[in-house]
Image (cartoon, rainbow, N blue to C red; front, side, top):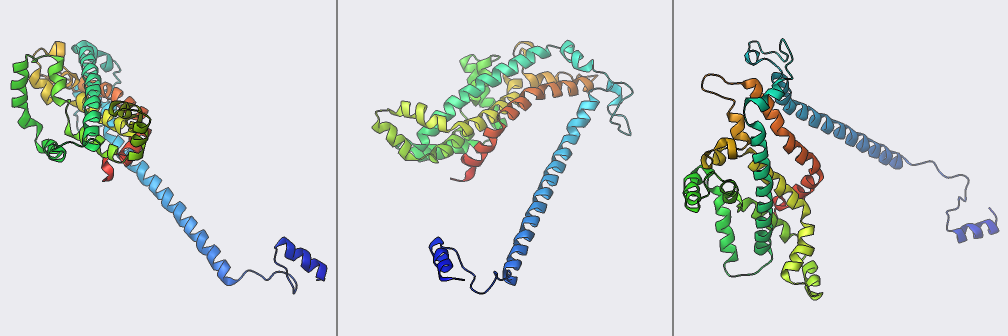
Length: 315
């Protein structure tokens, strides 16, 4: 190679082969390449196995739901026949229509929607403000009150039924919507969840808002609360499901089931003293699942993010 070629190569910063062509790759380089390919192949196999396991678990959990759906299409006397079969002698789509003719099932759905939506809004309002107070505001006895508040999670609901009923009777709220909703509006779980999420928000954001002249209420509404969207979504879904599936307290506090009865009470009404319409009960249960499935699908992304970043992270 001439001196001029060496000079040009040196200016370009590229290596120059002085003695013929580039040497062949070493055995070490080949080993590294083979090891990298092996790790990549192993990662793909692990990913495929993980997907197969998730789909298999999902299919396993879907088996009772599929069996309930096909049982809802059977005649009532064929549901518990032995040996069990997936299909009956006839397909009765009319069972889903007879549900609304058997009793005031539409009223039960409306009552449950009203109670669940209003109860969820009330719980979100109370839990977000209380969680912010425990996480950000400094006041005497804050930690002691929070520990006592968390202690209510250890008390079973069955023990609280009698005291809550006496209190609602004193307020005159027996057989009313507020009697169903208000006792469960102040939940320690929701407050704990929001407190843990608020503690993960940097203080600098609130300090910047205060420098700009925002007060505590405006800082909470305009800065902190919008950042807590995932945690609010998790709490909203859990609260809605709790009110939607609640059976014991509505059964105790309600006397006129046809006027204020909720959906779980309506599902229990298909079981009589001498005859249980299991076919209609299964059809009604499938209908009752529709709102909850819609909510979970609509908030799926927020649920995953909220569970990963909210109070379940151990902060």
